[in-house]
Length: 219
Ligand SMILES: [Zn+2]
Image (tube, rainbow, N blue to C red; front, side):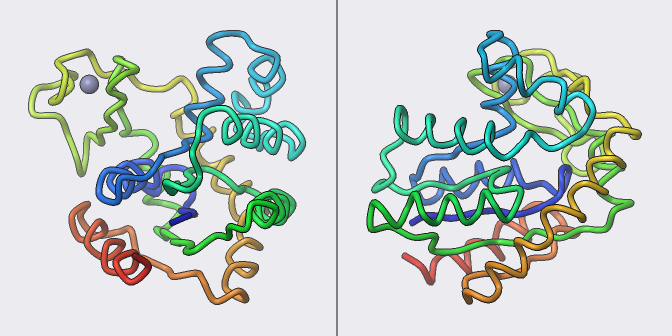
C-alpha cells in the first residue's frame, strides 16, 4: 500500500503518519526528517536545502525529487508499502512520483488530506515539542498532546526540544506557501479519485480512527 498524507505543517501529519506506519507495518518516509538529518550531517543535499527550510520556503523541486528517489532506491522496499509524509509538495513532484512508481508497476493507492484551520496550525506549530533522542523522535503538543512530565519524553525519558523553525512567523509563512503551492495537489489526486479529506481538528484518537477506516478499505 502506498499512501500519501497531505496536510499543512502543524496539521498533525507527522503523528498520523507514524500511527499509519505502525498499524499497517509499512515504511514511513518523513521528508522533513530526511532534510534535517542531511542538514545536520552537512551533506550536499543538506547544504542546498538548509537556507530554504530555515526561511520557511519549499525546497526546490529538483532537490526534493532527487532526495526522495535516492531514499527510495537505497533504503526502502516499496513492495512492503510506504506512507509519505511531507512529499509531494508540488504538482511537479506529484507527477514525477507517479512516473517513478509507474516504472515499477506501482501506483499511489490512497491520499489522505488532513485539514485544519490556519489559526490552529500556527498554534500547534508554536506548541510543538519533539523528543531530542533521534531514535525516538516522539512528537508532542503542549496543548493537545502534552508529555506526562514537563519537557520529558514519555517513551524514552529524553529531553524535549522545540525546533528552531517552529515559531509564529515561520509558521505563518509556511501556511501561505502551503496554500499556494500544495493545494493544486488536492485537485490532482481528487480527479484520480483517490483522495479523502479528514478533519484533523478533533482529538488525536478520533483522527487516527477516521484514517484507519479509510485505509482498512485498501488492505
Ligand atoms: Zn523519546
